[in-house]
Length: 369
Image (tube, rainbow, N blue to C red; front, side, top):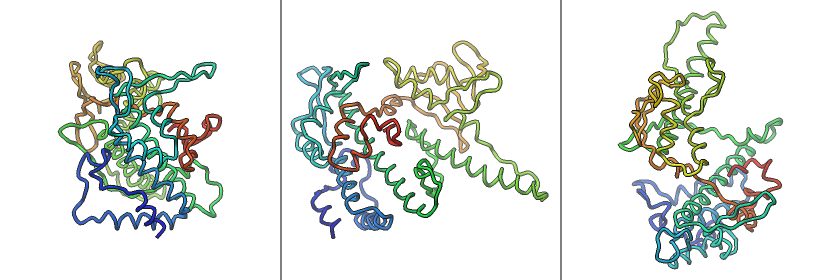
């Protein structure tokens, strides 16, 4: 009844009313969202979540929904203006977000329209954001809150299930085991989302190879049982391409993976998707701008030298052509200092806990948010 009262007080509208949830199908035939919500609430209670924490989580999630509806526009008539402001027709949504996150509305507005830089002498400088930058900051904030809550829930669930088992580190508590089916994706246009999904499936395939083939065959060999050798496709080299590998024997240096290169390009001055693809090709393609036999090439990567947008990864399930358009923007989820300061001062306990004061942030597992 307490949860029902809270939900009624939150006055959540249908999914179609929110930008973050209306980009696709908002309902599944034969699937009752209300019933599933009650199951979720019951599961949270069984996992030992106090009612107050559950309320905090629901308020924060509702705030995220409204945050997506807060649009920013350029100040003045010039759309390329380096300054932005919250659109007048979105002020009501902004007020709802501030109330739910329990932060002052004027500080939230300022943090969405400006970013804070800290100098060597800890002097803070405020820099106005453009409409595009403000929108990215808004989305980064929403992702950070959602990601932080998810990690907090995983830790809480694992603590509940590990009661009585001593000697477990906090890192171990940040893991949860979920049985999932393979969901390899290949569409007409494949972007960063598909790369991450297919990367996850490569990891699942490796896990399957390791424990079904490698470990079992090793165990049989140790026990002297001759079962022959079962041949299978080892996808380790494809994973080396995506996530990185140990030092290359012939060079003694670690060849940067696709994800490493992506993170490096994001922080470079004036990064572009085209520059990113150039680095992918120069590092992993057999044919580059300087050689036709690149010594650091990975056989699971291919791209035409003249390509401006596309590269191919040979996954265990087949070849997938990825379009790098949007990779840089999608990988920019930096929550700037003024937004972090805002959440640190929030009266919503779960948020202030996820974004601790800077002095504590170095040792905090969620500091990377």
